[in-house]
Image (tube, rainbow, N blue to C red; front, side, top):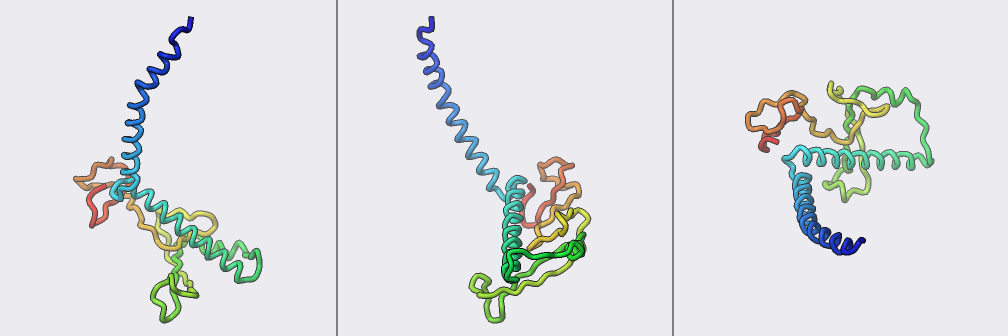
Length: 165
């Protein structure tokens, strides 16, 4: 009883292992191509997601710098001061002092902000819906492009200089 089970198990493993490894490599290459293709929906999503992460990191650095500039480890702010920006779209602009053309070479930065009306599709996050730079909005209208292969009811838009998604 049990004679040859290990040999048969090893043969089965060897028989399917090569095929599975080839399939794994093919899927990894396909996955990478989909993620890196700026024309695919997933590629656009990943690009926008990375832009948002970068903007969030810049805003966090700005807030931490402001707190440290006040020579404290914390900063107290009233809720009404934050609520004053609710429902508005904020653009934070970073400029360099006079004479410096590249932000990377500047020793100091000048921050200003601009208040714009919020778009109807924008959902503010937290008490203040702000962003460092405006992200490219996705038009939530139904697509009517004849060359588009995405579902008609999937909200998306096409840029003028790129072919359909």
